[in-house]
Every structure is written in C-alpha cells, then in structure tokens.
Figure 1 (tube, rainbow, N blue to C red):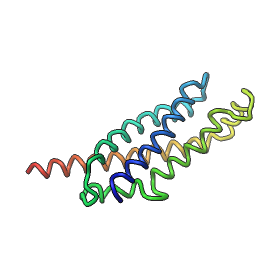
Figure 2: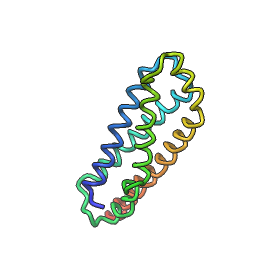
Figure 3: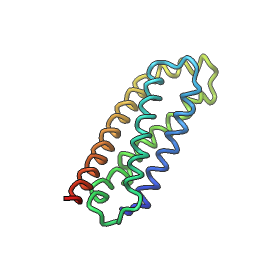
Length: 143
C-alpha cells in the first residue's frame, strides 16, 4: 500500500473521530461510558496524528510502511473503527430523539459503547506497536 493511501485512510478516520469528539464534548450530563469514549477517542487521535506524520514522506517500499500498512487496508482496523464511529454519530447527536429518548437510547446501547471502547483500545495498541516499530527502524538506520 502506498503512503498516500495510508495517509488518506488515517485522515478519514481522524475526520470522523474529531466529529465524534466534538459532539461528545457538547453533550451535557453524559453517561460515564460516553465520557470514557470521549477521552479514549482523543487519545487515539493523538496517536493517529503521530502515525500520519511517520507515514508522510515514506517510500512505498519502506520496510516499516509495508509492515504497518495492514492498519489502513480495506476492512482493516482503521476502516472498522471509522464505521463504528459513523454508527455512533446519530446516537450521540440524538437525531430524531428527544432528550429523554437520547438518555434512554444510551442506557440501551451500553453494550455497544463497551464494544466501541474495546475497539478503540485495540486500535490504540496496534498504532502504538506501529509507532514503536518505526522508532526501532529509525534507530537501526543510525547504527
């Protein structure tokens, strides 16, 4: 996978992540699960920005890029996370629901939020591993 494709995948995920973070930030009296999603999404966004910086300017035959390109593959971890966030947006914005309905919907979707949190954690781990590999490859190039 070429660096431009990986960058566009990361940027697409960051766009949706920022949208969700924005909605969650505006949610008053949010259940603790939503507050946790807000914090974890922010943490992942920071890692994704760092990953994007590492991808920029790489050659498509770069060993690190080839190793980590699976994150941005079709139906890969980043795609799955983006889809999960896109499914979360209507629920966070409460489109079509009154305030009471929105709170009730969150109580009903607690399991869904927990799945999203575990997905965020998994992707954070994968991105952290990719960043550690990048640091390792850079360190070896100076030897």
